[in-house]
Length: 141
Image 1 (cartoon, rainbow, N blue to C red):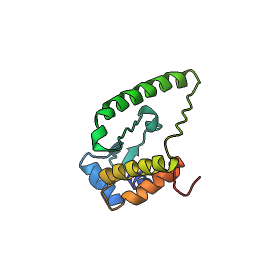
Image 2 (cartoon, one colour; image 1 turned 120 degrees about the vertical axis):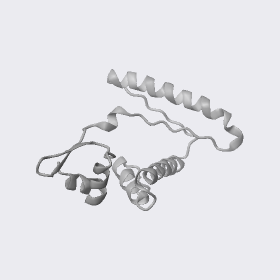
Image 3 (tube, one colour; image 1 turned 60 degrees about the vertical axis):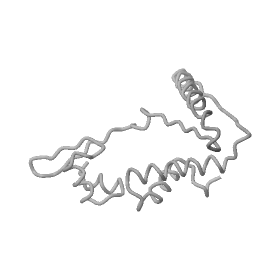
Image 4 (tube, one colour; image 1 turned 180 degrees about the horizontal axis):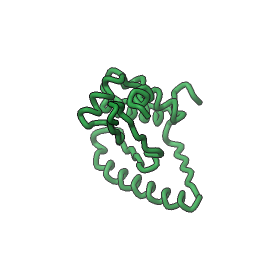
């Protein structure tokens, strides 16, 4: 697709996309044709290649629990990947965790990541769009 179309799809200006192309910082493969047109080659299903785990502790005095939590999450992720490859899944119910807290934590992580990638100015809108796409918007049940 053309760079201008890619920029619109990403929610950035053409100039910002062009600057990234010029600096070699586009997150996708792109090349400039002899006519001057810049073609962007998007990879499909990039999200399937990565897994994100999130661990937290409630206070500073529980920091030592964080490493154990990370190890349990890694183990769970690998077990679930093995089961998914067999067409099975795991359903985990933790009645001690408030759904609202988890959603807010997820929204905070997404907003923080968007701020680092796109800058603080557009982070809230991009995070909102990501949460909408994931079905995690606060307004949704």
